[in-house]
Length: 295
Image (cartoon, rainbow, N blue to C red; front, side):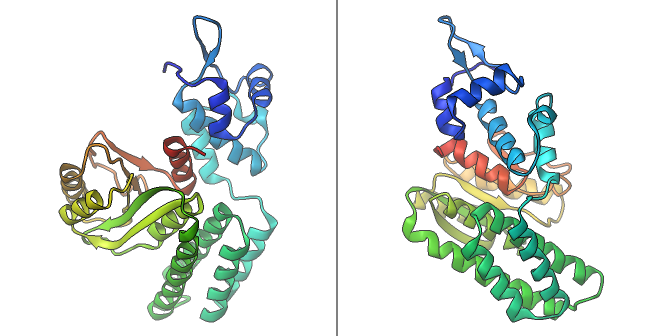
C-alpha cells in the first residue's frame, strides 16, 4: 500500500513522538515506510492503525521484540486475547463478579458506577464487558435465574447510559449514530460503544434497539451523523442480516460510513456491501474513530 502520511502527521495521529517512531523503525523494524522522491518517509493509513494497536499492547505489558514481525491481523488477535494489565480493573472485576454471585444487584450497580467514574474510559468499558460476560456465564450455568439476569442487565444499562449522558456537554467532535436493526434487542454492547465514542469527545445520537432499516437510514440522514455504528449479537440467519444492511445502505448517503460491531461467527456466510466495515471490538472502534476524525 502506498504511503501518503508524513512522519509529523503520523506522530499527531498516534501520539508517538517522532524520535520514538524513528527508533521503532530503525532498531525494531516495526515500520517499513515508503520514501518520497526527496527521500522523506511516507506512511500508509494501515501504519496508523498498526501503531495504535502496538501502543495498547505495550501498555498491557507486551515487549517490542515480540511484536515486530506480526501482521496487523495478528496484532489485533493478540490485543483481543490480552487482558488489560491494570490492578484497579482487576480489583473492580473481582468485586463485580462477587456481587453477581451473591445476588447483590445494588452493590453491582454501585461498583459499575464507580468504575465509570474513576477509571479511564477504555478500562471502564473493559470492566463493564467482563462483568456482563460473568452475568451471562452464571445464567448459562444456572447459578442465577432469568429474573436476576434481567435485573443486573437493566442496572448495567442505566449506569452506562448515565455515564454517556454525563459526557454530552463536553462533546466537540462530529455526531455518531448508534442502533441495532429490527429483531435485535441486545443493546448493552451498543451502549458501551456509544460511551466509548462519547469519551473521545463525540456527540452521540442513540436510536437504541430494533430500528427498521429504512427508518433508521432516513433518521441518520436527517441528523447529519458522521457515521452509523450498528451492533449485531443474534440474527435470524445470513439472509436476514444481508437484507437489512442492504436496505440501510440503499437509503443512506454514500458519504456516511457504516461500521458494525459483531463476532465473526455471527456474520459467517454474510456478504456485506463494500462500504460496510466490521469492527473486532471497542479498541478497534477507538482506532477507527482516531483514523477518521483525528486524535
